[in-house]
Length: 290
Ligand SMILES: Nc1ncnc2c1ncn2[C@@H]1O[C@H](COP(=O)(O)OP(=O)(O)OP(=O)(O)O)[C@@H](O)[C@H]1O
Image 1 (cartoon, helix red, strand yellow):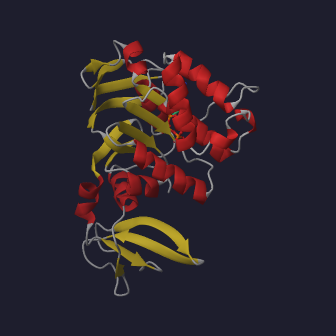
Image 2 (image 1 turned 90 degrees about the vertical axis):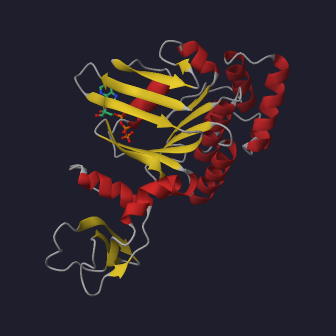
Image 3 (image 1 turned 60 degrees about the vertical axis):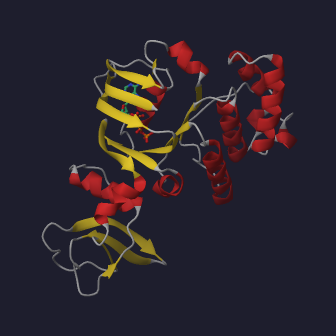
C-alpha cells in the first residue's frame, strides 16, 4: 500500500505542480488521470525518488520513502515518459547492465533476463540494438527493465504512447498480468485503458487531487444521468451540461449530464469512466478544453 500525505511541490520558476496531495493507493493496477500539465509526471517522478518535494510524506508498506530513497529504489520499477538508451548496446547487454545497477547477482540476472525477454516477446531481438527498436519494441524493453528485480511498486508513465492498437492491446494485457500482488501505477491520457485495466483511479487537475476511488464506485453516481444526443436543444435544463462532444461515423455525438432527459430525442447512455472524469473536471471549474 502506498500512502501520500500532504505532498507539495513548487518548481524554481514558481509553478505549483503538486498541491496538498493526500491519498492511499491499494495493490493492483491503479490509474492516474489528469489533463496535460495536471502534475502526473511530477507525482510519478516524486514516487520514483527522482525529485524532492517541498513538504509531505510518502509511505510504502511501512517504508518512509522520502527518508530512505535507496531502500525504495530496490523495490521500484520505473518507466518514464521518454527514455534514452546507449546507442550501441544490444537489448540483452542493456538489461544486463541495468540488472547489475539494480544489484542482482549473476544467477538472478540470467534467469530474470531470459524470463523477461520471453514475457515481453523480445527473445528473438535480444541481440539487436535497442536504439534500432520500433516504438512498440522499445516500450516493451522499457517494461522489461522496469520489471528487473521483481519490484513491488511499478510506475509507468504513458506506457502505450505511440503504439499501434495491436501493440497497445498486448501491452495492456501484459500489464494486467504483472499487476498481481504488486502495485502498478499507470499514468495515461487514454481513459479507456484505465477503465479496462485498473480497479482504482486517482484524478488530478492543476496539481490537486480531485477524485479517487474504485472505478466502479466512481461511475455509479452518474448512472441514469448520462444522455446521448446528435444535436443539442437550444436550451439545456438547469444544472445539466455537455460532458463531451465527438463524432461517430462523421456525425456529431454529444454526451450530456442531466438528472432527467434533456430533450425528447435524448437516449440514455451507459456511463463510462470518461464521463465521470469529465464530470469531475467540469464540477471543479477546470478551464481545460476537451
Ligand atoms: N522542471 C520543471 N520546472 C518548472 N515547471 C515544471 C517542471 N516540470 C514540470 N513543470 C510544470 O509543472 C506542471 C505539471 O507538469 P507535469 O509534467 O507534472 O504534468 P503532467 O500531468 O505530467 O502533464 P502531461 O500530461 O502533459 O505530461 C506543468 O505546469 C509543467 O509546466
